Amino acid sequence: MLEQRLYLAELFDIYGPLLTDKQQKCLSMHLFEDFSMSEIGEDLAVSRQAVYDILHRSEQTMAAYEKKLGLAQRLREQRQELTEIYDDISQLSSSKKMDEKEANHILMKLAPYTSKVQEELD
Image 1 (cartoon, rainbow, N blue to C red):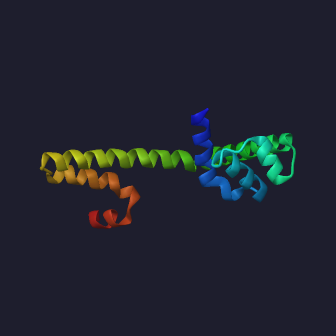
Image 2: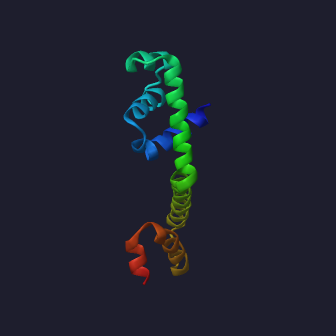
Image 3: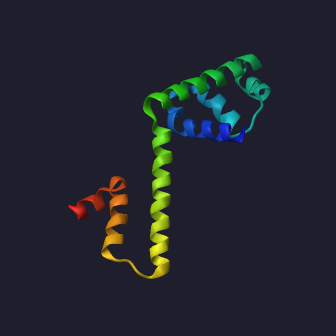
């Protein structure tokens, strides 16, 4: 349940602006303000069933965007790669030694995320 909510929040951060205003408000209240469907319905002057339908359609829409574009997956992969880079740098700094081969390895990992590193390698 919590994982699903976090996943929807992640999709909302990326694809939320592509939803209608009502969908955005409904999802925001549900995900971030922890309003019940009844409370959202009262605020939006719609039935609880209408809120359920809006939430369900919004989730389907964002899932369809993710399936086509894959931006959330790409972001997760980048975070993982950056975490590995951080760990590599931490190990080097704690051992107080960094040879050129190790430094180039780290720079190559960073290259896809920053143009400055790529320019220095060229």
